[in-house]
Image (cartoon, rainbow, N blue to C red; front, side, top):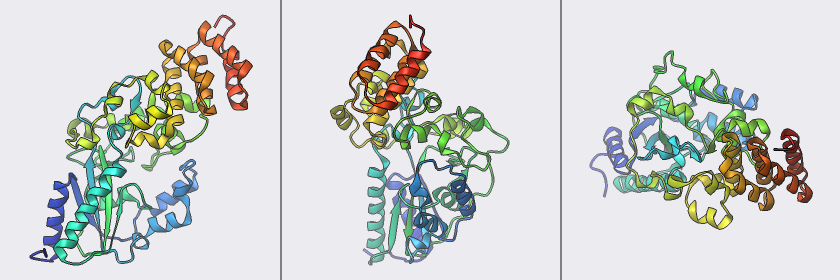
Length: 387
């Protein structure tokens, strides 16, 4: 059925209403003009602040971020949308152990949002009566999405690098649709509503938030617990605190979230039962079948099983949680991953005690991997003979 009017204003309003029906609380339109923050992004890459995420620095990615039309030559407008992900029980953000970022409480947004956007595009093409060139993204393509969101009037880029909406805070997934259709752009938000507030910078335990509203991924807890593969150094293990996956500290302290953020009604983003109940020992005991079953469709699968168990071991060591010692001993004795065994050895040395020291001494006799052996020896040197 063709729309009664194909005028850009009427079409935009129809898209806005349909987007809200599909669960997007934020909606805006901007142009495909070159983003102003390209220079900031290039400087960020030049300072190696992207860590091991080499895909961010490829020539194709850099060119696309400098000009959205490289992704869709026919692009005439960009829809920018936001979907609230804050779970109603707030458990992942407030747990004292096995802490998981709020956005990862439910289903993976990569499995939810593109499906909704495809429905939106099907409706648009039905309204117009013909195919429309488009490209859909949600943290999946080379786009400077926070700048596009600011230009589309969804919010401003806060000091914590998050996109903050003045009525709803920052607990939102952002998504974009590059469109081969003319739409009137929304007015950008140009006022810095952070003002003199520095709570996020002061609260960040690793001081990874930088003055230019970027962050050093090498020190960010989210990067360390999700993106960084392999062994964590002792400093990195200490940095993650008791976070298993991601980090919400800079959002939790933000006054705009404390005043305006509201839990989401979206069923897909509510806390799954395993995460609502899990403690560190549940993560330390996570074998491959359990990982596949309990975390089906979960964002946590990005860290892989060995990454989650590694992070749980680091958290147990940081919390000096004595109750986890028996489980850590089993992990050190039999886990197939060297990075996990090394983290377990480190955690046992942090917790200390005669049982932990004896387990390290036993493991020293049977461990063959050099990196794990080095961690065991460091732990034995740290602990006195009596533990």
